[in-house]
Image (cartoon, rainbow, N blue to C red; front, side, top):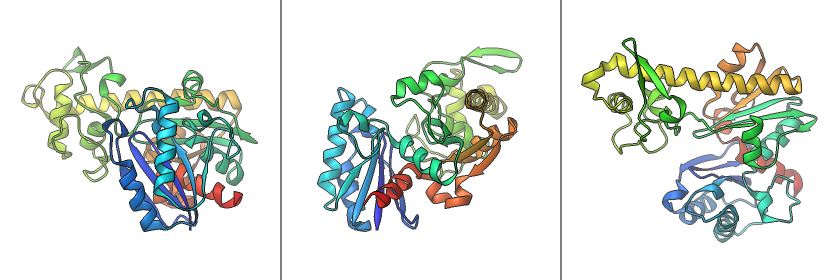
Length: 318
């Protein structure tokens, strides 16, 4: 087996190059989660003959800078696995400076998609962010995340972990415009949960208050964003907050997608990640052709696509 590993700040994901073995572990590095232990278990369970690795977890604020995070992740991976290891950077496997490994998971995905799909916008919506990578013969995105943010190739909004206060300055409830508090009271997972788009099981991150992932608990958190109890604004008020938050997120995504489509004259979108449905809706609104990677590679692979991509790239490079 050739294994691919994607070490993120919130989730660590793995996939075999044949797509038959996948795994996702919620592992918040900013909380000093036991990365070495989890990777050791993966190494034992998968027993790969070679490993390809991408990372984004170097940005976790437990590290003083990106380089420190890169070196920590790199050494932890090397300590956990005894097989040959190839680390993919923004310049591929042929990197010289460890800094080239920073936030390169999108690069592995886009290189594989450029070979197997062709010209398109590769869009991967995860729990925290959305990558929008234009591909014309090759990936055309900037290599540094802050430049991708500036160019609209990275949208810091995800299916689960985005603070609603980062999406909405205010909401309308009962014909009143109410500012949202800037506290971390509710996240996008709460909005998707109460609107029936994800289940308790699919709520794969910590809740802001440490309480349950059930619908009632999510409604209470939504009410808190306007400094209210659920009894004050009712379920209808909490649902209004959820609906407006997701509409705002959707509008932001449509604008970012339209920008890339127009800039690179692309009419096809290849979508991956836990937010595939959300991306597809945005693509349909823009009348873009949509290729769901869950249909092509399977739902489990779509959710961990960078790990699968780096496994495939490592397999071809060995």
